[in-house]
Image (cartoon, rainbow, N blue to C red; front, side, top):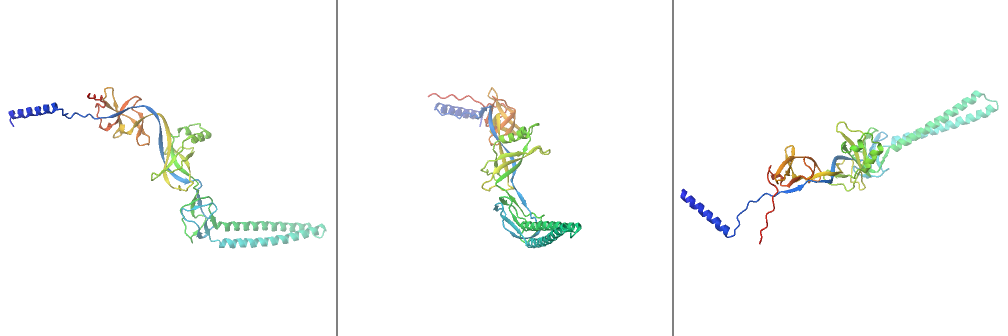
Length: 377
């Protein structure tokens, strides 16, 4: 195309645009990117602080036999709910029964000897009063009688011991709870060193977790008495327990104890939160999360959409008086609600920041625009 033809083509295009404009057809206009902003203010907010926890029954009892023998019967199964006094295991009681019978026989023999010694002593006593026997014979018969009495007491103790050992052959639940893992089988030889199972008293459960020293600062301050510490614990809000699958346990719990010693390695305190377990849904060993709501007062809260993450930094675009944006570095604390941050540095009350569209802002870009005038009809 030569120069003359190019001029003709440009003239024709200009004429076309003029015609379209004169006919009332609007040409596409430049669309400015829209942003949403907010003014930073202080407010109160509740932050859910989370701790990894493990459940434990408040009265977990390890079951071991008191006597040795062959395990004849297992009367319960793992996971079974049992009542206090319910039979759990039965050990072969034949040897214990024989020992009881032998002890009872020895007691009868001791009683007979005691009776003979008593008769001899009383006889010698009468004879001594009549000056028929000597003091030596009287004292000797009296000592024999006392030895016989001691033998009876010893034989009676043996009977009681044998009776107790016979009772140990039947093992009952010491508390109401749930049966844990049963590590033996019928026919096994067991002894006092054998662990049979654990009965987890699950009427109330303790969630054990670690709390940072800074979080419970008031309770570990120097000079704080035990009464003040317990008062502080009583003033803490109710806590919730969340299972590993995300299910929240329906009953609220209370923090009941804090250890008095800070772990030098972790800088934390051991803590327990008590949860009621009326339906038996909680078991010892269950892991999850204890959630403690902490009230934060008079803090700057901004939406997470306002924060742009650049490697290890967090930036927020602050709107200057000329409506342009400038990036400022901030430090934040997660509120745990999935939508807000608490700003601890980098912003001041009254600052205006970009909340929506912050990822698209460039340094010095205009982010606030005057409203377009409305066309008058």
